[in-house]
Amino acid sequence: MNSESTIPSFLGELIKQNSTKLTDADTRILNVLVSDPVRAALENGKEVSSRAGVHPTSAIRLARRLGFKGYPDFRAYLQTNLIERGEDFEHASARMAARLVRAEESGLLASILDGEIAALEQIRNAVSDADIRSFSRVLQTSRRIFVFGAGHAQALSHLISRRLTRSGYDTEDLSNQMDHFPERLVSITSEDVIWLNCFRRPSRVVLEIRKIAQARGAKVLALTDLAGARIKPAPDLHIAVSRGEAGQPQSLVVPMTIANAVILDLAAIDDGYTMRSLAEFKSLRASLAYECQ
Image (tube, one colour):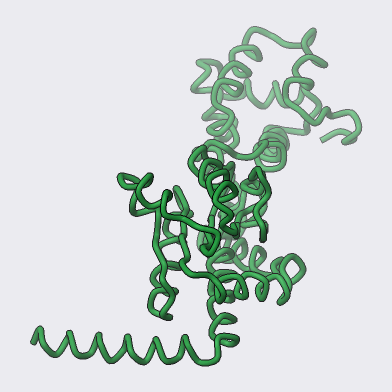
């Protein structure tokens, strides 16, 4: 590639800068690239040329006209645009394609593991023990705990609700009760706490629950990724952490790790309540299993 200073950061700017040099074949290829940038970042020059209906070497000539040494450099440029300048990766297809782009160098499983490890490592600097303790203190002193999450966050909400219930805390997973939402929300009081899990932009339901909690005086805890952090009014306590960079898997392990840390810390401060409840649950489960034999 020529000096980076001569290559605009965005494809649209690059096309405008070189518009007078472009041939009909170039235009056909660019139409193919622009119409499906996700696919364009994965294909080689021959495949792109074939889709455009032009000579197999046309993509190479286009790349050179745009200032690149060859099509591999141009393709790397397209991949960088997809990975680093892909906005919020709102579309699942774009996020998947970005992961496949990264996987080409190190292998699919290795790239996923690298992404998970990197996402977990950054928690050390993003979340403190004090953040975890602030969550567990509120849970310990609440009358009831309501948990809610939509989409991928729903799975985390199920896990939190089950673990807190086994620990002896009166917990309801609102994610499972969408048909009975009004009945459940109308019973919330200032003695209760709502734990919201939100990945990517907050849904309308998340924002409505937050407003209802504020009106009824219930405290709100929020565990979100950076994209889901825009909850208004602001939660009483909020842990926002990256689940991975663009082009990496958006890790569920990160928020699950934080949730597990909160529940473990709760067991450390509730004077043995969690331990006694878990022992009772284990005994009850063993008894029920025996009766079913």
